[in-house]
Structures are given as structure tokens and as C-alpha cells.
Length: 216
Ligand code: SAH
Image 1 (cartoon, protein in one colour):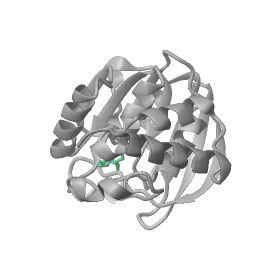
Image 2 (tube, helix red, strand yellow):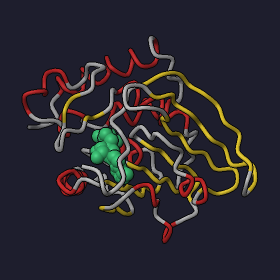
Image 3 (spheres, helix red, strand yellow):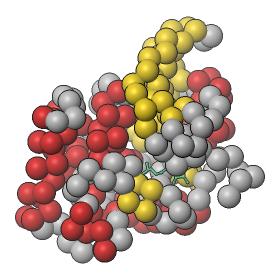
């Protein structure tokens, strides 16, 4: 598969939709979505639909998030260039690619080996390499590289992973869906002091579950 003018045209239409219908206004986010070839992260059977606002199955019974969810979560991070960003749930690597394209330093963790391997290869091929990709349990974060300016969780956690809050800088933000498996609420936590957080709510979503290493 290649990135043709047809794909580029479809991406432009998707970006217009995200801006006009989904209320995404951060031009840096929209620009990254306009540039990153989402279809190359999907199986070829989904190529024609890759720029519709849909989720698709990826390896290991996981899913790539809707483009509108990627855009919303990324916008909520309020990214500045060169910030250190920890992503939990690399999946196929599409969200990580959007972050790298935005010129932030991406650290990403995935607990499924197939997806870790797939995303690493894909991101290398596309020259959109995170600073560090880890195969492991995202509940633990990445203490060696902490603290982070921003943390993005792309799977739904039933309980708040407090270790991740510890790894956030003061003034840093974590965007995370929280709730039971069938529906989560998207939250943004802003770290005010080592023990105080501001918590904001951004509506209902459905993410694949955040599992610890003993589940499959
Ligand atoms: N950002 C991804 C979304 C993938 S879906 C993309 O753009 O494709 C969420 C991912 O979170 C899945 O791949 C799942 O395996 C992973 N995940 C679930 N629990 C996890 C955990 N505890 N640590 C790391 N990754 C986890």
C-alpha cells in the first residue's frame, strides 16, 4: 500500500469534518491528522474506509480508535513542542504517530507483543519514531523516564492507575477514560501539587479495557 493523492484527499475531508462537525480546533492536531497515513496502520481490506470516522479491528482483538477520539484526546493534552508524553496502549501505533508528527517526545507502552512489534516496525518504516517503545504493563508507567508533561491512556481503566499520576510533572495533564468495560467517561487530570489534582469530564466513550499483565 502507498500513500496516494486519493488518500490525501480523503484525509483532507476527514480533517474538515473533525474541525466543522466534531469541534476540534487545535490546528496542530488537525495538521498531524492531515499528514499521518492512517490507512497504512490498518489491514488492506479496510483501506477504502480508513478515513471514515470509524474504529477498526487490529491485531490481538484490539481496536484502533475513531479519528475523532484520537483528535479529541490529543487536543485535551494541550501539547507544546518538545514536551515529554507517555502513551499507554500503543496498539497499531497510529495515535503515537500523530503525537510524533506534532513534534513531542513520545514514550509509549503496549502489553500485547504482536502489537508492540507491529507498531515498532510500522513507525520505523514511516520515519515517525517515538523516543522509546516499551513492551510491558502500562499500569506501572515508565518510572525510568518520569516525570512526564502529559500522559495519554488509550484504553479504558476500571480503576484510576495512581502510579501514572505520580509520574506526572506538577502542572502536567493526564487524559484517561475511566469506567466499566461497556462505557467509560473521558477525564482530564491536571496536577496542581504532588497530592492535588483538578479533574474535568469530557463525555462518554467506549474503549478496549486496560488490563494488567495477568489478564489476556
Ligand atoms: N493508541 C492505539 C489504540 C489501541 S487500543 C492506536 O492508535 O491504535 C488500546 C491498546 O491498549 C490495546 O492495544 C491494548 O492492548 C492496550 N492495553 C490495554 N491494557 C494495557 C496495559 N495495562 N498496558 C499497556 N497497554 C495496554
